[in-house]
Amino acid sequence: MSAIYFRGKMKIFFILIVLFFKAVSAGELDGKGVICLIYGNTIGFFFEEDRAYEYKPKGGKEKLELKKREIGKYYTDENNIFFDDVKINRKTLAFQKYSSFRGECNAFKNFDEFKKNFNIESLIKDNKI
Image 1 (spheres, rainbow, N blue to C red):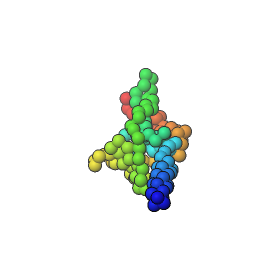
Image 2 (tube, rainbow, N blue to C red; image 1 turned 180 degrees about the vertical axis):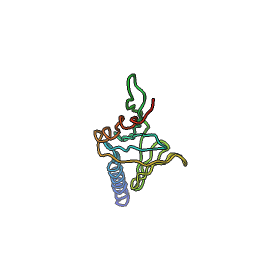
Image 3 (cartoon, rainbow, N blue to C red; image 1 turned 90 degrees about the vertical axis):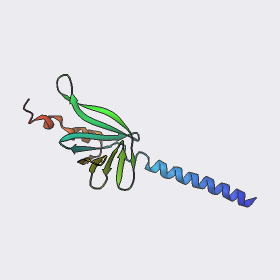
């Protein structure tokens, strides 16, 4: 009887440890973002509530505006961030989608910093038309 009791306690202990580590890693990027230059296009990704959101400059009625689109849940490991078909290296901030789309990113610690560094005016300053 004591062996069954011990196995039951160990099973509960194991489940608690797994849940603890899952809770610690969940949302570790929330509140942070990256802005990437991918083949001349500027695209931002912001992480909140365990989800990745894409920000792109799009035409508004009078000027370009940042448009937000939910990409889906993000995942991390010690080296990379994964969402959709995207992989961003956490050390070099190299962007890769599929095997061919590549770019470089800059990281930002909060949404205000992220939005400020998107700077739409600087993106369109050399436009001829």
